[in-house]
Figure 1 (cartoon, rainbow, N blue to C red):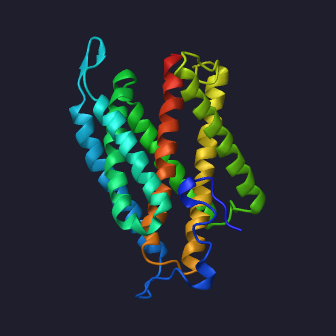
Figure 2: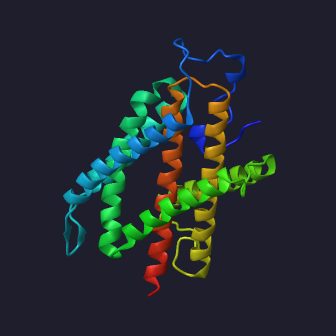
Length: 253
């Protein structure tokens, strides 16, 4: 049974692969190299729009004078495109690049804000994100970390718990209620962010395993885009969590 904490790479994605019913008509199948190349392309697209959004952000004495449209617009459009991709994975060759472009606007704008508040934090978060990616990829490929069923169940459960906490936080904030401690820069808040970073990182292992399983079972070619999209969803989450963690640490200085 395949399982992933990433909603984009959920258990049912490759459910019918064994029957051969999802193999593309031209016989082309998903490859690991193709997925890697498409992941790199999605990252490049997000970098292009991210750099544009970063340069558009202006700051005044009262804070950010513009940039709200990039942050909220990119986040909302990215969310809609992500949902479309999840439910219509055969559209991934089109929706995944569009998602990367939209997410780039969001990441570029919010990164500019973080970097304004905490100089140098963005480069640190980027280095930590890709350092974690390559370290876990090496650990997975070398067999140091294995995506066993118990491992998958634990990561999925923890990911679900984090989602519930974040959802509760957003709902409560509508009523001006804040969950104490975990979003502060105290010991509990930093500990919570460390936990979330670890769970986000472990989702990469599930993504590697899930993509590898799709390749082994002969998924159709468009699933390369879908696999790349799912991996990028996790990388975006991991990067944002590193930003949150580093901001908490720097605010204590």
